[in-house]
Image (cartoon, rainbow, N blue to C red):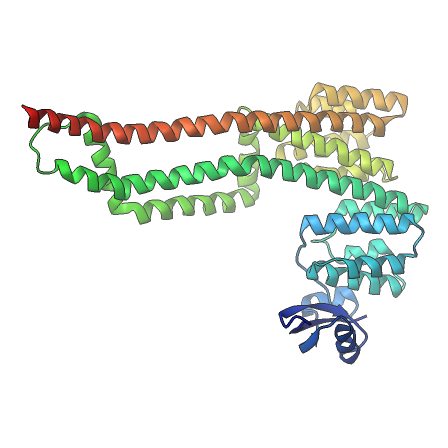
Length: 408
């Protein structure tokens, strides 16, 4: 069914816009009117020529959606399928439920594709930037085995866990990042604007200035003359770093280096191991073949060093070796992981062992994030206090000398 973009006015007189699914623009206007929206402009969302072929003539969305909204949609779909709601009705429900216009457009097209006879996995595969290979592979297995409700529930749990982990990491680093940015800004302001005005008092004085004051005046003079260049260089460095780490060579360099940074490297390895164990457990438990699972999991760990170790391990596993042996030989995985996998292989409880490892590392990640945050905050406060203290000392020392000269 076509998807229409509209602009209009709601019952409260406020401007609104969004998308609505309908078989014609006339019926789309009627549906909006029922919702209390008067459409001032409505048009069908058209596809680009580059996506027309792959979508069978219907519109496709090539961008991404917010992880929060996608996670919520998966949980809602899992709940509806578990309640034995037919797939087409479940897709209609989640499409109407979401407030994310981008996701609404995607799910409308997925539903249309399913209604045309394609499987859910095939329909979702048309949106690779929205639905990950993990999602597609597990849905495919769930449809083939008739256990789509169980697979969707696993996917929902997995997506919620990954979203929670991501929020913990970003939430913990947000405050230190803010303190660091504010500190740099205050330091530049002091040297560029505050210190020069204060040190003008000493300009006419012929008394010898303390070394710390001379150094601060020199730094202040350079900063006041070149502060736009300094800020530009800092911003440029950030963009260069992001560009360089987006290249294969730069990403490999950064991933290798970051694993060696004290505290931070340990945290990154813990997160990678937790993702590896949780994702592999989820996929094996859903019936995805081991080698196929490793092919997908290697991209989830988000670290080229560990990914390379997984690729090498996969080659050994494909030759008939156990999982634990190649992982242990790589030296990139902790002993507890390889030991638990070895036990799981012997007892036939690999999925359970991987879940235990993931749970363990999730807790360790929480503790590590707390430790890193507690470590960074006092370090930055001490550094900021030291800079401000030096600036204050460089000003007060000559002022005391002037005061002494005046009294004498």
